[in-house]
Length: 101
Image (cartoon, rainbow, N blue to C red; front, side, top):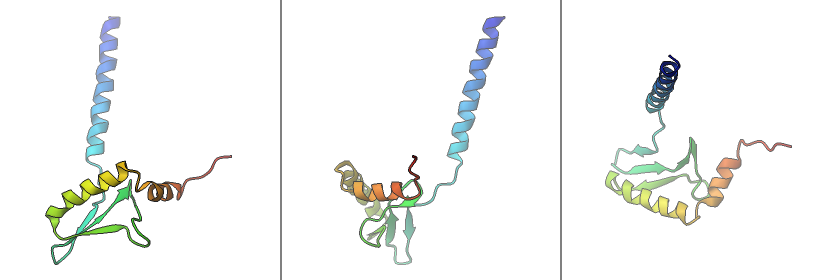
């Protein structure tokens, strides 16, 4: 009988895990882009829900069209891997964080 309880407990844990994943899938995510009337795309790079300032006062990249977005995202990924956005990420993560003493 003890084995049946363990199996049921494991099954319930799995069910809760699957339900949690489904809940996360249904969560609304903010779009990173805006499609303009002239078919250009403004791509806002974010860390979580916070936009990252890429240049002074600018947090979006202007793309000529939607097909250019993939190439721009690849370049953003390369910039992140090369550490080019570290300073901007540090600013975003520092805002709102509390130093604990």
